[in-house]
Every structure is written in C-alpha cells, then in structure tokens.
Length: 175
Image (cartoon, rainbow, N blue to C red; front, side):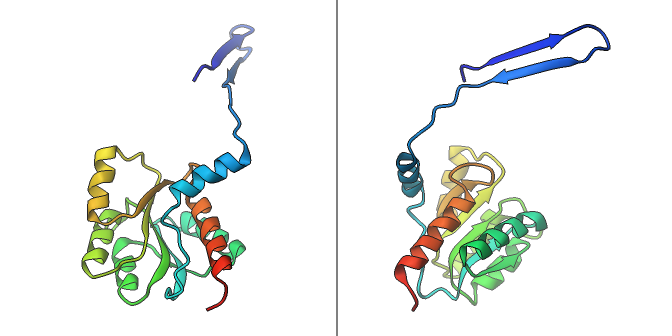
C-alpha cells in the first residue's frame, strides 16, 4: 500500500515502539455516495413488505448492532438466529431487505437463501459476512439466489444499506 513500518527499541527490557504509516486518499463525499449507490442498486423500500428488515445472524451482538441501527433510522425489523428460522419467517412475511449471515448453526446462509427462493421468496437477500468470499463462491451463491454481498466491517456495508433503505422509505412516503 506504499506505507512504511518502523520499529525502535532502546534496548533489552526497555520496550519497543512500532509505527505504521499508510497513505490515505480521500474522495469527495459525492463520489463516495455515488459509489455506494452503484453497489446498493438492490435496496428498495417495498410497499408490500410487512417489515423493513429481517436480520439473520447467529451472533447476538451482531443482531443487536443491526437492530440498533434500524431503530435509529426508523426502520422496523425482526430477527432470526439461524437459517432455518429465517426460512420459516420468510415463508409468512415479505421484507424490504433480508440481511443473511453465511456461517450459522442449523442452516447456513447460502442454504437458507436457496431454500427460501425455491419456496418462492422474491425479495432482496443480501449476504452480510465477515468472510472474504472468492468470486467463484459469490457466483455459486448468486445462482442459489443471493442478491448482493456486503462485508460486515467494510464500506459500503450493512449500515450503508440500512441508510439507503431508510432514505428510500422516506421518499415513497406512507402507504
């Protein structure tokens, strides 16, 4: 990345100081927004949706973080802690967005997506994962019905998608 790492020590038992310098290139806010918009093409506020967001993740903390973001943005949400529970919920309700973790007990995210699609679920299901998925893995998951992919700790990420959904919802107004 064109950075520099320096390590200094005053001697044995005196500690060590490491410094990392990485150059950062800043983009204008409108450029970042446009880049996010292009990657968030699938975000829409569906007037037919019973709930705005279904949060699917086996980690309670991850669900809590997403739920808090939904609350702050004025979005309604429900939670599922595994793929099987998510499939059961998608069988009876439509959501504007489903955020699906990949690695979960009972049923993994890709299996849940495929099962929901075979049962006729047509709304956007985005894979939100901490894993870096290879292009071949993403292609396989798209064939199984995944709409898009977001990294948990990247930009744009799940919070950006929620912000976009809140904006879309505001623009369509009450139904």
